[in-house]
Length: 161
Image (cartoon, rainbow, N blue to C red; front, side, top):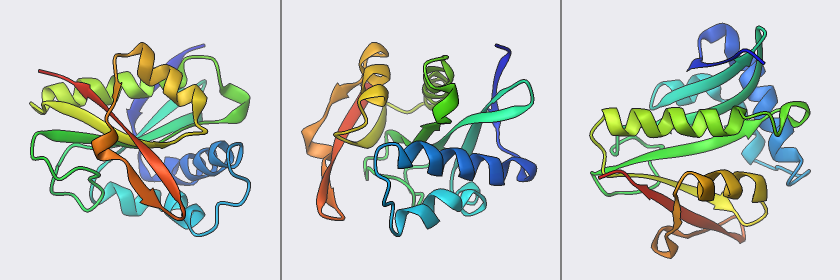
């Protein structure tokens, strides 16, 4: 696999949206209104950095790095935090390292931006993502938990300094 992690460009937006929707549907087939948010890659690029994992010219993964704590996409109001959102890997590419590579890129960007923590919220059913977070040193942060759409999103944080 010749995996490349880079910022998404306009020609990648549709593929990144399709990957995100397909990945999230493996956990929740009824995405409801969240599908529109997953598909709005162009909108996210106005307030954050959308990353893509590309293998042999094909987008197989995506994640959104929120480097600005004042961004409307930030999930923490701490000015020392950066965020990671909407990590997704195409179901047919899972287990090949794209998810880990995307999270590692977000970590590198947060460090480069001088952030103290990289934070994220995740559904309790996202076990594959949780394994990545655990392996890379993230810890559960119950103070970040949010109730959203009738469920609880679990907070995780990686201390960078």
